[in-house]
Image 1 (cartoon, rainbow, N blue to C red):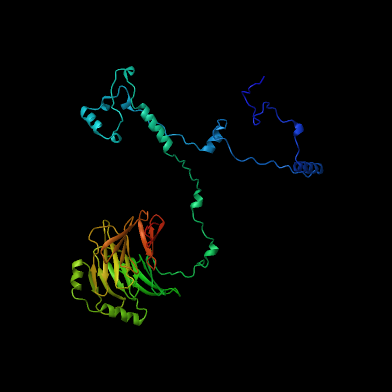
Image 2 (cartoon, rainbow, N blue to C red):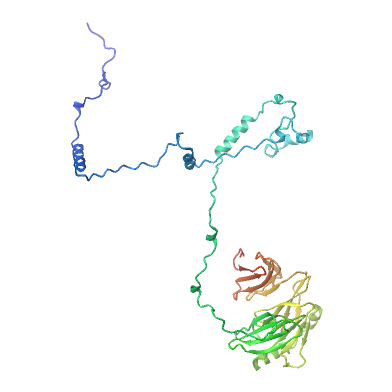
Length: 432
């Protein structure tokens, strides 16, 4: 009897799924050679068994990791806390938190992002009467989106040693040569020295003192060459950068003194003083309140060829690099006055009309700039445009002095609190 095979046999799917017997295993020839070589190395004792290093990986989705290690690896940042509810969210808020009908209309007409609260504060008699908040799920979903989409960055604090910020001072041996021994000492003044100025040639030096004298010294030898006695203390001296003239501030008088070190220098000063005045120069001088008095006989015995009377005591003097203009600061207890004098035309003018307290002034060596130092700031004025160019703040409590580099690119400001501020005038950001 023929039987119909309902399930035809397929060799790809055997009926018996038993493992292959070991008798059918055919060992590999090359593997056998490697095993024999390893056995020989073990017998000789020169087999170096190196355990391969495990890669530094970890399971991202497991929960078996140490919490401290997991936090160090993931650097998880906690989400910002939800703002705590205030009185307006209470079921029984204070009356001042409830909105009036006019305020409620403004709240409904306003943009949802401009409202102070996203809900209307309401009052209920009991907690059980408070209905469900309709925007609860929406707000929680919005917070989840914020936490998911907005990145949070961990700000690492910089641990900086304050000593590393200080500049390293050079070795004194690297700064040689510098003066180590006092070479000269000038004796002669009987009181404190208040002013000092060096001749442009570097050969002479002028000093003023509270003993009402001005002395001119010879720097190479240390001898006192000239002595000028005054009627008041010498507060300031300034040597003309072009002509052999010394400007001296003695009380309310500004003296122009020629030491007469050489006959040629004396004749040049006399020729400059006796030069004819420009038309209208004396009228401008009288209107400004500062009078110029020339000596009757030239050359004079004491060397003073001209004096200028000021209404206030003079505290500071400075010359323009070209030697024709010089500025004086006269001060009293309430205000200061800056006066600019012109030697060739013998006239004086006041550049500022407003009252201000000025400590010192300076001329720029190459540009038409005028530096005026108050107590806490330095103002730079353009003399051609007659306007303020910039204002420098050296963070000082009381400015006492200023000094410009010969190129005019750097300014040093000294203050009474033992500080020096260095400004780079060519930089856009003029910071110390």
